[in-house]
Image (cartoon, rainbow over all chains, first blue to last red; front, top):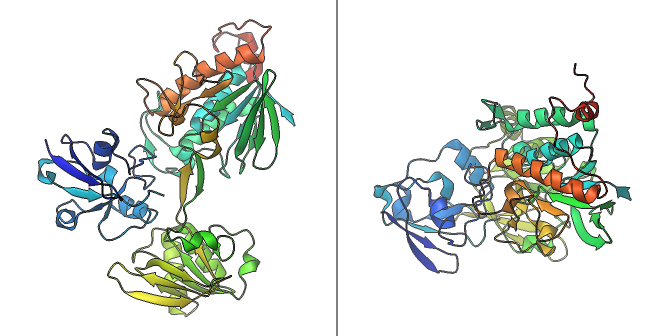
Length: 106
Length: 339
């Protein structure tokens, strides 16, 4: 099962096995990893599952759809490695991926 | 002071359908919502997105669902109190006393919280100085546009609100529109207009930039903006406007001792009552073993909570289960004639 490393804003690190097919957001929420709110429940409508994907991994992800880019406009302190956790589906290729959470989601 | 049988917090789909369930059994309700319109998340977050899992409705949108629910509750002539948030609740004998942000007072034996994930509030600038200048140079909405006449204004955002206000204020103020990327997500027509105004020298556009800091003592004198690549720029300005959409905040509900579990209110599944008699929670805001955050689950929760409200609102009457197909009293309440 792919392992995803979630790093809270304070540096606390969680290495979590996340089954293929779940999203980065679900991997955190279902395992009580703090820092991801996911208010809308994963419908790409709230920008509260915002993560910074580690530079090495960012380019390996499928491109953002425009709906995700639009929602990132509303995220808290987005940068060029910003993604919404609900829009990243875990696959074997992402085994080892590192994501960091912003200081808050809103 | 308004007396009613049930005060509903939240005018989303679940609040609306519960109005209908209450109306059918002869209970009056008043609805309070912090948004300026009816429909909750359906209207604010996904008015145009399709929904495929409303029973017997193969597909609808957030907007059409809201419209149909409003039509369904039309016979009950409900009062909506929009732009208003419930601030305080307290127990008074057999009733709850509810006070809103506009100091309106309701007296009701029942409160149904159908508040989704909380009330919608504007998303704010992330930098700390923005708090100090809020309403004194930092704004998230415009109450009187004349206030901005001949001022230097920086507008942040890429959606319709940002574009529309940039266009409007550029008629009588010096506007700079700042956005984190080169593309705007607002309506195509507004995007074209903004770019045309830029060419004509009527406003300026700075992309891809975000705010980095605010300068000034008692009032804003300048701001610094920064791009992803670290390029910074200083802009002299009188005020900044942020249009980053809305975020849901639980707000005062968190202070009502409802034993919250991670922003959700635990309820029993018999009648969706919380730990307090006469306070019910339904829809996305409630939690119980097996809870599904689906609109259809919220409808069920509302139907059961409505029956439980009857006991407290009509303690001396006996509740009788009836079907809308055959009940004369329900037909009267609906204002329909059935042979």
